[in-house]
Image 1 (tube, rainbow, N blue to C red):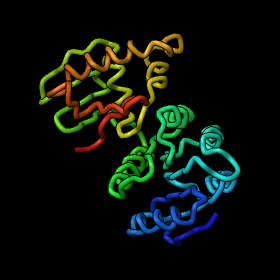
Image 2: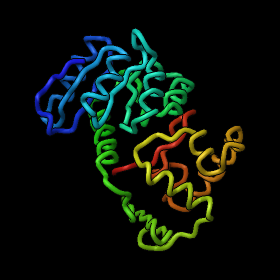
Image 3: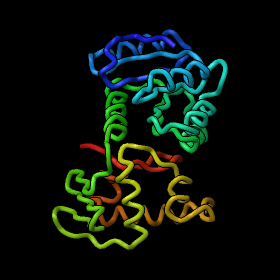
Image 4: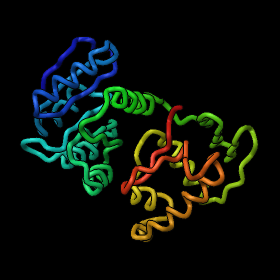
Length: 235
């Protein structure tokens, strides 16, 4: 593990990648004075650095020389909920689902834009630095009041079924995070529904028709093709 800056009062980003070129690229991309950067070039070093540096976000490659990145995620999730963003050349849907189901919070396929990476990091930081759940979530024209179980669109109440409300609540409270089909099905309907993705698709469609201006071009509930859904965190 190598520390790349002494500004430890800044949000801490742990970069886990064994390719020097990628490490240099990420260091340059993130060298804007916003973050304290740390590096690890294998899985075991990443596990050790997670303990010693206490990062606020981990950027993790899956193809590490000693441990597969998914195994690193599983081990970290045994004791920590630090946000993990996977950065990988693996672009198969199965790889994304596997990593997200293991506990990753987001997944970017290489190559990716610096602007998008920074936006994803900021989303994770807002979530990790939040001390307590907000009772009211406001995203553009949508407002979700958890205390009153009230959903407003352009200041008008929206009628949702209990299942639609729980689905929206789950998505909103994880805004910016990719949730896989299986994660959502297990959370909302239980393990017996894990092999019934059509139940989720129908409810997502119904929910979109109620909260989206154009359900065919959703602005709030975004589809991660073949993987799951992500609630947009900013506009």
